[in-house]
Length: 207
Image (tube, rainbow, N blue to C red; front, side, top):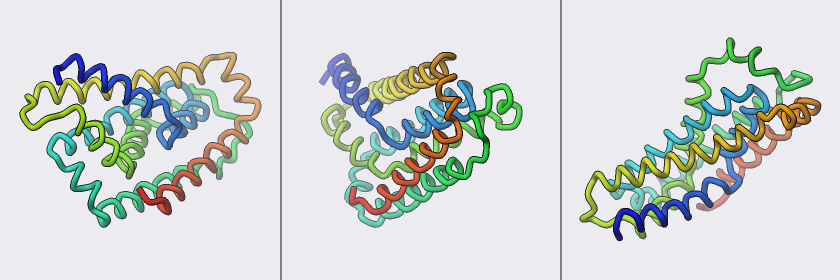
């Protein structure tokens, strides 16, 4: 498969994967509605950077090892599910009556914290090894140049970043954001509860 064919296939498959509802989507929505546009963008950057970890071990053939190791998947499931539950509890315990405006939060929460939150959420997704081994088995081959693998990886990260940047832009639109702010407290709790449910699902569902 040549470079352009691989990019076309990755674009179609990975966009659908990125757009499907999951922990990353819930986290970006929560961060944007609670902490503002900058927090959402920083979290999106963290999620895109998290992909680099999956791409790296997949290019080395480790995705197959992880996907077929019950112990490895069990550890990732416990860590990933527990982290999602922790993020959900933070949202559920929110005591603010409204979503705080971005300027009020920007001083208190450094951008690096939002990036790390998104990064860890993506890296600890136990479904990632299975997804990447499926995708890379179709696109990659043993004789493929390292440069081509790097291009594929960078393109997947860009797709991820563009999708979540679009989500952030939509949710931080003044008109839309004002409507959410009326029920900011309840939305924060709802998203937190959703995160807890996703965490429990990660822990108790076979990958």
